[in-house]
Amino acid sequence: MQKKNENALRPWVYLAGFGMVGASSGLFTCISTLLLLSRGLSLSMASLAMSLNFITVLVLEMPSGMAGDLWGRKRVWILSRILSLAGVFCFCFGNIPVVLLGNILFGAGVAFSSGTLDALYMERWMHARGKEATGKAGMWSSIVQYGCQALGSLVGGVLSSTPFLRYQYGANLMLMAALLLAAVFWVIGTVPEDSREKTVSMKKGNPLREMAFQGKKALLAARHSPVLLVILLGAGILGFTTSGVEIYWQPQLQTLAGKGEIGLLLGLLSSGSMIAVVLGNILAAQISARIPTEKGRVALYFLSRLAMTLCMVLAACLLRLPAFCTFYILYYLAMGWQDNADAVLLHQSAEDAVRGTIMSTESLALRLGGLVSQLLSAAVLAVTGIPVLWLLLAAVLGMGAIFCGAGYWLSCRKKAKPASPLPEKMK
Image 1: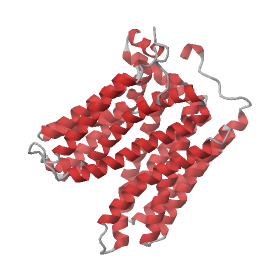
Image 2: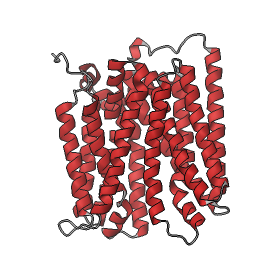
Image 3: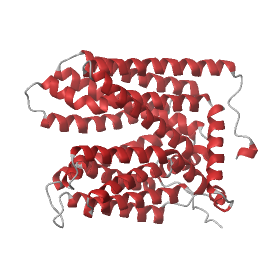
Image 4: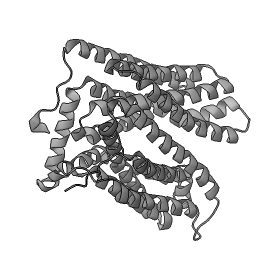
């Protein structure tokens, strides 16, 4: 029998776990490529290692969300952190094959973490405080994760010149391992288990059959919800368009600066973009809490994407360093707005039984969109420059927002009643 307050909401419990993982991510982000090179990999081998990481995430993204929905989000999240921890130790002491294995394990850790503890946090927040408070839940999650990641990056930069056990970047890796291990023990000891109804399917038999059935449930849920369809399609479009900014902003900054030194500016813009995402989340959470209708929240979602489009166009066209820096920061402010609006719509529309699967599907769409964009961007940059590429990507983002918005409004006009819930036999 469950204890009376076993599932009582204690947001700080989840946020502390998110913060420890975010800080560990920041410690790694600031040295990721340099770490691979220090372990004997050439630039081409480092590219291969990153590709292995990316492919692993793509392959496991959806199965991880299904596993969380079926067999318990807490236990799948713990598995993800153990995989990441194993990857850290591969980076600490390994030769080239072991370092490549570390990248695979790290990718598996990223994949198995999505749609697990974050889904459980949002679900329990809504159950305790109502769907109208979803934006606030996303806001606090963003503040903690981005804030701790920024702090981890700053600390990681200082530690990067401190060898540990005669291994370069060993101090970063040991602190990462300590934070991941602390997060695992923290979540085990403080976060309540998923309800038994969600984990009973472990006893039913074939796991692959269970996962296939879970995928059908998620597909049916999306088919019955115009909002979920818009979110999943919009995720692919967003992944396609934002990767161009994230990859090429540094060389564009160098071009605009000419022969000037940009070291300090790189740090300021990198930290400023994280702060802007947090501020955008806070802004969107305050606005969405005052919007009582789904249509109003959908309008807020599309306005954020149009704001991102405008910032991309202005950053591409105004070829002056101050203007570029301004609209680069504003772009990430709009992205934080978009992130919060997206989270509100997804969690208010998704059923508990498929929440993690839908989140993992959205993450997969983002990554696939980014992969396609990287391939096409290379071809575009072979014949033109970064500003033209950004204008093309902005056109895709803006037209995608208009197309998805038109589809949503058309589907709403065709339906005289809200989307039907999942049939009983599919629950």
